[in-house]
Amino acid sequence: MDDAVAHFSYDLTALRLEYKTTCDALAYWRGGDPAEQEFLLGKKQEVFRALAEASFSNKFRS
Image: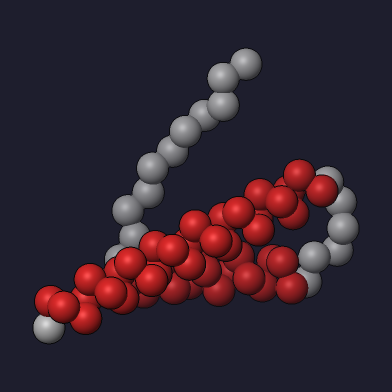
């Protein structure tokens, strides 16, 4: 079975909220499927990278 792939476009405010909610989900982890926790850890890293890139790009646009 092929995994579904989705692409999203966020503005900086939405990206920050996505990062916050992912961090909250990890902080209040109640257990369950370890694959879900691993997914959230990977997602947190990817969203952080996107935030860092957006911050870097915005710094030089101003």
